[in-house]
Length: 415
Image (cartoon, rainbow, N blue to C red; front, side, top):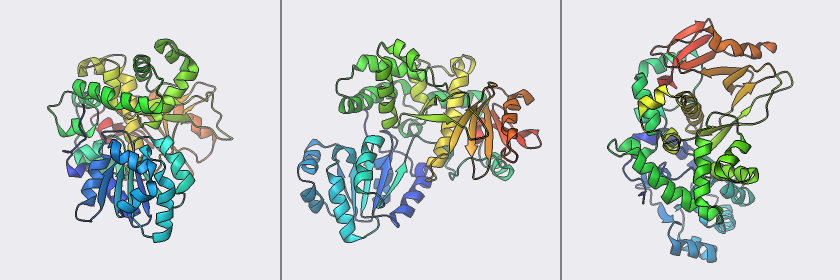
């Protein structure tokens, strides 16, 4: 069985640590959610050192039973400051947490972790609205792996130049090996660990256990077929019928299972962008995974050369780029405002970053020398004066450059 992470270098989560410290001074309850094995407990335990904060885990069955059968007594037995791990196992605690924080009015009383986002958040919204800060954690970003400060990605000349100077640019082989290995903290911290062993154990020990908890009647073999089918379609608009055929279940079941994966922090979506002046041609979201190593494992790809040169290399590279940009916002304590675009002329833009008054278009290309054709779809944004911000082609180039006076060539390593 996969063991809980205990050997993650401290620097890896320093940006998120700063966010936790900040909101702890402002809210009585801090909730940290994310998939298993990304280091939630490790980081909060590290931040708890020397503070007198107690720790209790609801993964322990006896502790969980105590919390569920007598939540008031449980919280009296474990006074604040307190860290409660895997809070989703005892939603009965939420009402009594509300009573306690309303009586005490003390910021930072309770830290909570959870691995089941939406099921968990329904209970929070009912009981702790206005009293809780919610932070999401995912797998490591390139910035964290390099030990560099995390800031949300943007296409601005000063930002790109600073990144080009402060971090190494990976060779194509190094980049695809990194994509293949994934960004789970345990794998990053231990270069000798084989990804195939880790992900096999991860699927059997954690995902299957959580699926049994959330949907007890689920056929685990069909669910694994479903995950493989979803993985090979990363970066594509969701096709429920095709995935249903692969897994041998109904489209209704596929929609429910995708919701489970989203609940567990395994996948996320980019939704199509539209407003009154830009019409979209499609309503379906595009599917992405938070960890490219898991995708490669599910797709049965174990060689970086195969990934780099094969048909799956492009989609997984796009998944990697979208994921890195998405996580750069999460790690800064912000919700990503990211979309994709496709219109009736079939012009498609891989990524749109929405700002206060503009949209930043980004294309992802498995090329080291993209031409102007790569940004041809950016003209779709010109229909609205002042809407289009400088754009970028994120690609396999080794140097930061430009295609036009406002469109950049950005090496993937700088994301």
